[in-house]
Length: 304
Image (cartoon, rainbow, N blue to C red; front, side, top):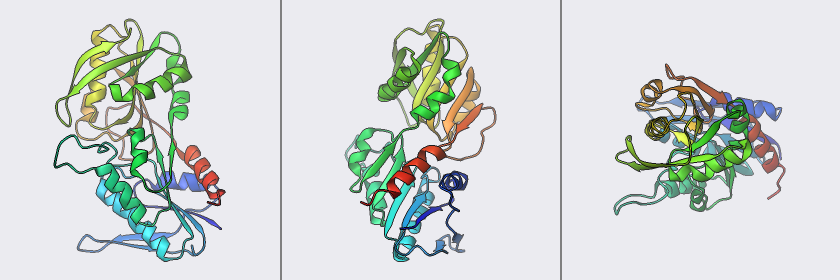
C-alpha cells in the first residue's frame, strides 16, 4: 500500500512538516465553502487500495475542524482507501470525559464515536487530557506524549534551584514525568474550580521558596489554572521568573491578559494548536512533526 498524508485547515504547516519527514508531498485536496456555509471537500489524488493518514487537530473552532476531519475521512473511504487513520494532535472535547451532573452529554465518547463513524480504522492523539479517554474509542488509539520533546526544550531552565509545579491534582502524574526526566522536585497546587474560567487555590504542597517555578499542564485554555498556580507559588516565596510548559496552548479568552500580568519568562508549547501569536506572551513552539512522523511510519508498516 502506498502512503498518503492529507490535512484539513486546522494546522497545514504541521501536516506539511509531517509529510516532509516521510519524504512525501501533502495530499492534494480542495476545501471550499458554499454560500450557505456548508463545506465542500474533494480529494484530488488516487488513494484506492492505499494507506491514508489525515492530520487534523480539533482545536477552535472545534466543530468546524471536527467536521473537516470527518469529511476528509469519508471522501478518502469512498475513493477506495484501504485503511484510514485520524491523526488528531489536539483532541477537542477531551475535558468532557465524564458527566458531573445529570443531563450532561459524554462529549469525549461522542466525538470518539464520530471519528470511528467517519470511516477511520485508527486514531493518533497527543497528551490526552486524561488517560481514561482511551476507553472512549471503539477503534485502536495510539496515544503519544510530547513530554520528552518539551522537557528537552526547557532543560536549561531546570538547572539550579528549580521546581516542577503541578497546577492541580489532575496534572500530578504529568508533572512527575517531567520531574523524573529533569531531576527536579515537585510541588502540587490544590485548586477548586469556581467557573469555566476561574479557579481558587486551597493549598500548596511542596517546597518552592527560593526556587524557580516550572508550571506543567497538558493544556492552557483561558489561563485561569496556570495563573492561580503561579500566584500561589509566588505567595509561598518562589522566584518571580516562571516557565510554563503545556502540550496544547489554546490561549483563548483572557489567557493572554492573564499571562501578561505574571512574571512568566517562557511559555513553551507544541504546535498542536495554531491560533496565532498572542501579544505580550513569550510563546515558544516545539514541533510535533518528528513525533507524529515516527508514529505514521510505524503504523504504516503495521499490516494490521
